Image (cartoon, rainbow, N blue to C red; front, side):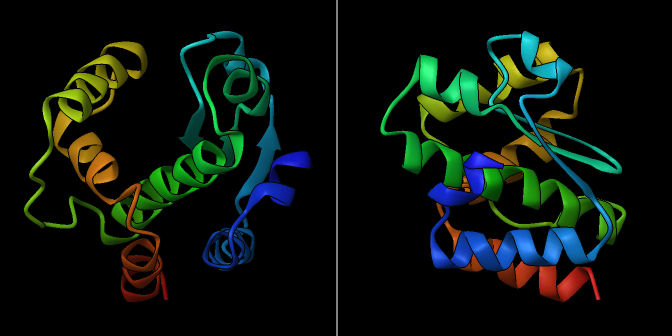
Length: 134
């Protein structure tokens, strides 16, 4: 899978943990036909829509990692069986992204707010995975 080549060292650690938890890692799965989606998590599938990232936004490396971090937050939430319970101060652009994600996926705004808040904080994402996904 090509997206793995773009990962930072922390991104690699996160993906190792995801794989060890028996998630099926996919790249450009059918869900990615919705061009607005960069990643998607529905257990047991962990999907990165690399072609959508490449065709829509740059730098590709940054957004591949951000997508991995974002989806990994959802794994931590699933392990905890609920929201992580942190303050999530988001700017207007991230709040707009939250609403767009909720509209596209039908997910929960609270869960998406945590994922958008943490998607640029990889060390915290890894910490949350280690804390809740033993």
